[in-house]
Length: 460
Ligand code: UGA
Image: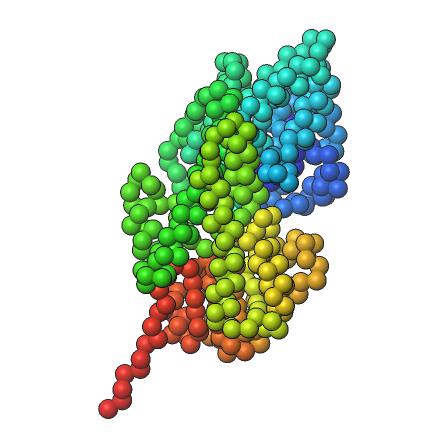
């Protein structure tokens, strides 16, 4: 199938590269010519594990190409996936101007029938507007446009695996032709019959994904309702973690016990610094705005958002309780990305944390394995050092902000000996209380009891 992808952000790139990997011919375009230039030079503008390999392979085998000419993408694709950004407006609504612009461009440029697939996250009823724009701007031409919604459920950091081994594929369609075209595109994934570039024949999930066909409105609603539910789960875990901490219970034991109930499920119950990234925070806001416009009370989601904002303030308070005075203290940050295995800092908890610590007059040093370039664009004055040990040296406290697995493997004894005060606030529950306490750290995590320092046996 000849497919075009409009928008070369992380969703567009993963979608384009994975569809090429499944055997389709894909042209991926973006109006940011600099981004396309980077891609054409063989580099990726984002860090996403596994993506570089499949982009390089499919380019060299001629199935994947890039172009800064969106009109070329319209001409080439029978199916066009719209993957442009829908960032939040100041009032929380999703900014749909890119979708509108792309729809007008498709309507003006198309010379043959097209299936236009909405992959960007959009509020319900956007598909209806998309149809109207295609009809109005394409009027008087003998071209037929079909519209479908095909929301993505990709997590940054594991997006390639999520695309190739999904739990479900949701397609919102108006007619059977659109459904059968999409079914054909996804057939290798539905049958789990493709040479998997990630797992060398030993893919983790044996089961085939669910194929869910709905109306376009329902598919759009599924996406917002899913992300918002995940956000609620995280805020719930954070709220209970605060209580567990006061009561001396262990949130990990508690959430393990809670999650064993299949009606609840074990995932997304990890407490910490709250949810960030370019999806959960903005989708939650857009969903609330959509509900408000239709007179439905979504204050439950507002509460999840409020709890999430409070995480950073609570964390800074914990730091203040330990250090007494924050002004002038040297604080090291380990991790800046909104989660591990990505370089994305959009709406990352680190952004609010850095702002709050700067307000307090703290001297900050920071390290992240992937996100230092992006944080330097946001905070050029921030002292970033490409070495976790240097960040810790002479610090009054070290804060774990992102759960990069490599932080677990640091030589914590060496860090202990180099700090001015061996104080660690672990915002992600990455490390073991017992081990850190045994090394002599003052160690605080989220919702877990403080380990008691072992009393050495009295010598006889
Ligand atoms: C999220 C959804 O998980 C994907 O299904 C969806 O496709 C994607 O948004 C999207 O709409 O494009 P993503 O933003 O990559 O994916 O990140 P998540 O893995 O959902 O994590 C979001 C935030 O929640 C991170 O800051 C993470 O650290 C935090 N989190 C996650 C927790 O604090 N606790 C948890 O238990 C899980």
